[in-house]
Length: 228
Image 1 (tube, rainbow, N blue to C red):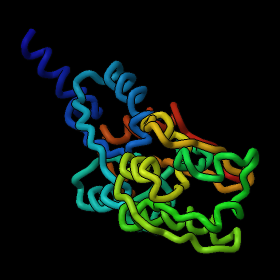
Image 2: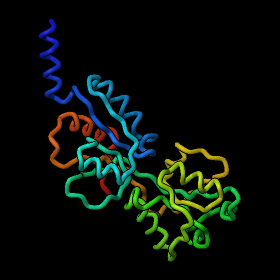
Image 3: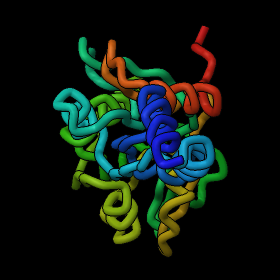
Image 4: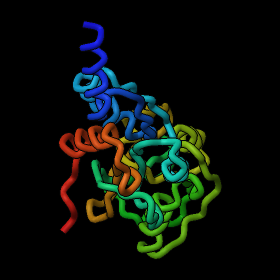
């Protein structure tokens, strides 16, 4: 019996159903995607230990390249990387975060042009360069460069700085699932704006069967159709 169990475990290990999988994720993915994936993967493959790590996008790219992570759930866009491939698993609109006392809270309909004279709090570029540049591009396309008074390295800090009245911020709508801070008003922005994207990231040509099992689950659960 003991030898049969050993043979069975060896067979499952060869299929990727035994071992450790290191998964990195940004904080918004933790609210949107991770719980369902962890639950389902655990049901399917109880002998795989998921090592979950809250890691910023730029750090995920580095850690994937250095094989410190096996898979990542990060914010797009990222710089072209010959070692990493991504597929979009979630898209969402951007929203505007305002201090409760800000004059724009009284406007019924907001356009990006209305933000021109406001101070901004921005997510630090070194933490997620593509994400930062996407927001900057939205503002530049409206004909202005934001007056940035403070940068934040994490989403909770960004929200707290807005609550303190330092400035306004543009953020993914899922931030509302994570951070309910008194003194912050969330307003919708025009629908024509680009969407913020979360992607699954893996090393190209990685042959790990455990990684493949996780990728297959993510794709079957969350894969977003390509833009046309």
